[in-house]
Amino acid sequence: MAGWYELGSNDKGKFSFVLKAGNGEVILRSEQYETKASAENGIKSVQTNCGNDARYDRKDASDGRCYFNLKAGNHQVIGTSQMYKTAAGRDNGVESVKTNGASATVKQG
Image 1 (cartoon, rainbow, N blue to C red):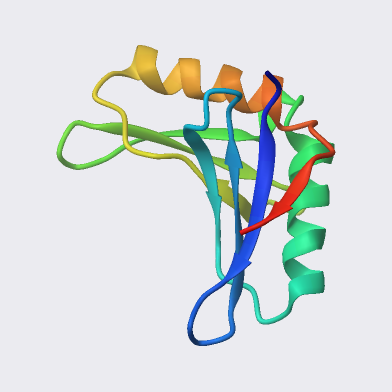
Image 2: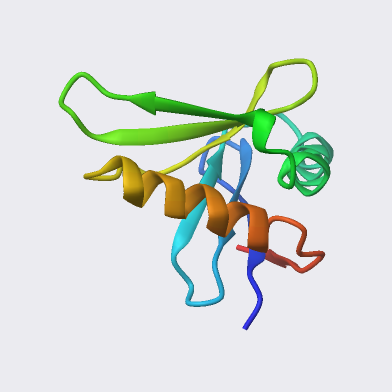
């Protein structure tokens, strides 16, 4: 099963999205957006940039865990991964976003 996006809002009226892998696991989380249209543009940016390895900023947290940010062409962060125990886990997460990020399926959360 292919991945998909879930777009939703919080109790303060801010919008965000997550990218889920085919197994339903969240592989990327967006920032909070003021409008639904801005969040939808964020999804389009993931779809555009997910296949470009140079757009992934691989990071190591101070506690030894690893994560990554997906950035747009203007270097703004589009989404952030979960924390991984190993660099190999993080790299698998990057590959999952590359595989699932082009999905056109957007579900309302």
